[in-house]
Amino acid sequence: MAGNSFGKLFKLITFGESHGKAIGGIIDGCPAGITIDFEAIQNEMNRRKPGQSKIVTQRKEADEVEFYSGIFEGQTTGTPIGFVIHNTNQKSKDYSHIKDVYRPSHADYTYEKKYGRRDYRGGGRSSARETACRVVAGAIAKQMLSELKINAYTSSVGDIFCEKPYQDLDFSKTETNAIRCPDDATAEKMISKVQEIKKQGDTVGGTITCVIQNVPVGLGEPVFDKLHAELGKAMLSINAVKGFEYGSGFCGARMKGSEHNDLFNDDGTTKTNLSGGVQGGISNGMDIYFRVAFKPVATVLQKQDALNSDGDIIEMQGKGRHDPCVVPRAVPIVEAMAALVMADYVLLRRQETKDW
Image (tube, rainbow, N blue to C red; front, side, top):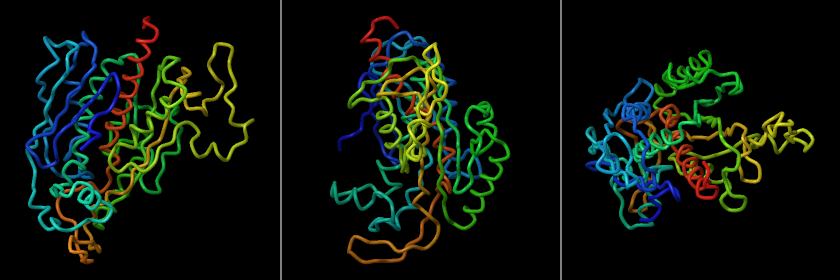
């Protein structure tokens, strides 16, 4: 199986399955001399882990990270950083009923047709549990990028939207509620929506907005390696993601050029930021902001038609512990993937300029 690594200079390779003994990864290219805050890493893991509130899956995992290499006396050594997260609360029997069934909108069918076999326990390698490894690497990338501020939050659940622009939000409030929306009134509505959907044995999707601030001018390459293109790839590699837009996004397609242009101030900043902090694939020093769309979780606790390995359409019903809405737990994953992209481009820029 190919495609288990991400990044060019700051590279993450992950391994493991949802119901295996452990998941883990190797971070290659992290510079030496970065002081590691292990508590901060665990805090990021706690934001993503299951069982943290009543509106997420009740699988209980401590998600404690064990580092095996690349860190000595609290600082990175410049060598590969190896780490493992042990799986401790698997319930593989919850999946025995779908051993020979392809669940609707899961990777079951495509995996088996591509590889000739699949791990049906929680989706194996296709499980979102793999994203815990990304959060570890992203937490280290954040510590390398201490001058940058990366904040993501839930901006919609179903048809409930946070209408306030990110400039009017206090990001410190994001962690004060289970849905991770920094607007209290909207958060209450979102939580009620998820609880209502959960009672129906159904699921609901939503969007996450991410803002990257204090970005220097000059990150990104102008042709195939555009900064926003890599951010888009990073976000679309996350389980359940169905869409990505940055800056004005699809709304910009309805505007005239005279409305959309970001006019300059005399200091190089712009009066507006519909470009989303990137022009010509290169960061322009303004805030980078983008939105990521997550589909409803495919496993629902309602009866549905499904295809089995004999080619028959049968009736099946989801079992086990699943998120009614994946969005709140995906907030730290979005931040982590953004951090990995920014770390890669910062290292590339350092190679180019030799001065920062």
